[in-house]
Image (tube, rainbow, N blue to C red; front, side, top):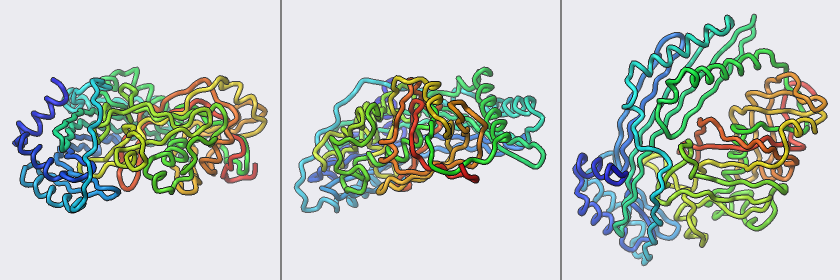
Length: 478
């Protein structure tokens, strides 16, 4: 059954909406607007948390609702409700119509359709019984504790979502998408005397739980979490000062996402509040630096067949060989900037308006090996994993904490260090990339991006990179 047929069954057959009357209400509500849509959503979510040797929590939730949006110039009217009824949609129409009263807009053309599917529509929540999910977490707990006598705590979590959406436009165009999403996380705390340190690992994507049930898979996640804890418990204090920093491949792309990616979203650049505003066509990064936002990667956490406005996602080149060539766009900001939407209009749920957001943001690989890059550094820092971070979109200034990092001494990886933070400026850091590895990798599928109070799943990726002149915050002098 197609996504459109499945969502027709959910919203019209089961919820009781009359399709023709609903389309008529939408058409009337948006008459005279420049753009807008009715966003119908049905979702099921569940979460299991295992902690301290027992199942700590298990939750299941079903939600449904709609959001109706009208766009007139730069103004947006939005109304939403968790009730799927024609009366509720009609009342929402009366509300959003106020934004374009007296406006004589020409309703925008619908997005071009696609037959591409980036993930199956299977519901991960119903394919594996409750008992098997709990047993998986119990097995992870027992396995980790059996590997090291220093284990003091094991936490494991499993979560899944099945989201069905249909987007109805005033011209009768309808677009649907059905989106599975799963994630497994393992964290470990080790104690050695009075010292305690942790390690964690997680993975996921737009697929089902089946892969996680394979012992070779979940054991590899548990082993990685345990390895991280072992590294951290032997770590020494991080040095402080300005030095070359080598970033590992994959998840370290989260720094790219935060420090650079948000500044390349269309709304910030239309409003000229980004450090990258007005720089199209100019060099903003070292030669060889190419950054893309790719929502078309099959099964990835940040991928979407269509975005939350119905536009098919794309592989959008943002920076090409150091030159800024594009921004990520939703429909409204693209129209106001005179460019095409890129399939980056995203929202957390029916209760939120769409805005330009990243999908899978990746720096492409170069031609240097990891060993070559490390060997080029006399003394510096090798950051393999990041924890939290903050960035100021206007200035580009960022601070990131490294959850796993090592000293580089005479071109070789030295002791692990704890407490290292990277401090810098995103646009400036791009110009200090001096070596780009040939080992581009994607993160394991754990990213969540926050913007304006909304959280959406995303992906990141990059190769090994050498960046010169970053400030490392630590607890001892370099």
